[in-house]
Image (cartoon, rainbow over all chains, first blue to last red; front, side, top):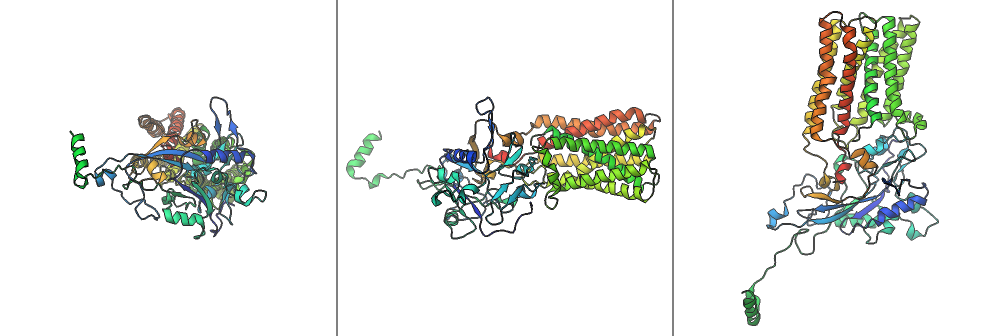
Amino acid sequence: MTSLPAPSNRKLGLVIDLDICVGCHACAVACKSWNEQGQFGPLPDESPYGRDPMGVWFNRVHTYEVEAGNPLPPDGAYASRLGTPRPAADARSGTTAAPITVHFPRSCLHCEQPDCVTVCPTGASYKRPDDGIVLIDETKCIGCKLCSWACPYGAREYSEVRGVMQKCTLCVDRIYNQNLEPADRQPACVLACPTRARHFGDLGDHDSPVSQLVAERGGFALQPELGYLPVNRYLPPRDRRDGGPAGEVAEEEFSRKNLSPLLRWVDRILSR
Amino acid sequence: MNPALSVLLFTTLSGAGLGVLLWTGALLAWSPSPLDRAPALLALCVGVLLLALGLGSSFFHLGQPLRAWRAFSQWRTSWLSREAVVALATLVAASVCALALWRGNRGVALHLGSAALASMALLTLIATAGIYSSLKPIRAWCNGFVAPFLVFAALWSGGCVLWLVLSAYGIAIPAPGVLALLLTAGAGLAIKLRYWRFIDAEVDAPDASHVTGLGRNSAVRAAESPHTESNYLLREMGFVVVRRHAQRLRSISVACGFIIPAVGLLVAHWFEGMWSLLAVPACLAVIVGMFVERWLFFAQARHTVAGYYG
């Protein structure tokens, strides 16, 4: 049934740290590899060694250049920044801000009110009532692609080979899998990340490590104005260490008065 | 959004078919001088054929068409499912009317059947519009213009097809009918023009800074693509037509879809004996115009996913 279940207490999801992510794509590759051999069957690739390779990927890592200031307010936690005008860095300090590079892994956010579930005409798309994971029942999917139109984040892809839609499963075949060690019962992308930029946990529990991380760092949801209530959170890039907002190069304060007479003489010689 | 041929054929052909069925049902149920048996039967057949062709086109576009029977099950939440249900009801109502007419029965069965036919055809158009207008990530579709336009476009294109059917029996459309048709054309055109003004004022286009949340007033630019080759998302949602081409196509769709058939209708009304002659070009023009308009409806719609790709 594509009616949404009653909201569950457990909201399993991911927290992705945009400050730490180095854009290595290990998470994307680990996801693809796990799903080649996991419970849901191989992810198809069409002409992988040909001219136009095409295939389904659940996780993609974008790279952006962000200019004019760190988007985080100084104190940290906030809900949505939309509608809050930000002064440009150069207006504030008079310096030109260098852009920073932000790597941005994009995958299903396992929303609480996902339209991708309600628009499905066959009931193939569903949200699990106990842990909130959104899945596709590939035996019912007719491949009409309407769910991918409804998803604002591009979480769902159509497989030409299988004729059905596919998406991130939050490694539901790993997290409850008794054949794995308890420490390995996490999504493949979380375990693969070399910089520990990805975290997995229950975002419905305020005391869980992931929820505390979100609260500390001011984790934000993507496109909250659409009302999908995504569960995943992104941790924004931190302020740069040189004091100013990201990318700002602080002017050095230099006063000759503080120097010893010898150094003052050296400075005078070198300044000629 | 990628203007897939199957979906374009579906909405234009089925739209015209539903328009024919709507007019036919309404005329049989409520008109003071209802249609004769033969033209009514032909109209029903043509309407059903167009609707079936359109539905068939979208059916064969599915990845797993053999499971399509499941699409009737989620009518509680899904507009696509609701459309399937009411489209089926329209076909059933059309069959009831055709059967009653065939047997020469003009009693209760025909009256109820034709009233149901008109209502179900209208509901099918509304459900089809609901599919598009319920999609929040696509601002060009998630608005109140889609449903009225689809209804008037169907009435207008279906009306032109009905004109063709009637002219095959030498029946001219009476003056009230001509007026009604011209009013639907006018309403459709007005809504479409207003809609184009609405989507041209793209004050809140979903760009990278908005969809990544990385800075409302920061410039966020895609520095590198997440993949070197194309993928499903880019194919399906990466298509946006160039503004220059769009303007030209808009003019073509207005001319072919509205102006030419309306002028033809007026000429046929004023000059005797031209109904049959002008019916075919008018129909062709309206179908071409609707097809181009629908192509633009897809090609000028931007999905928020495109924002992630810079």
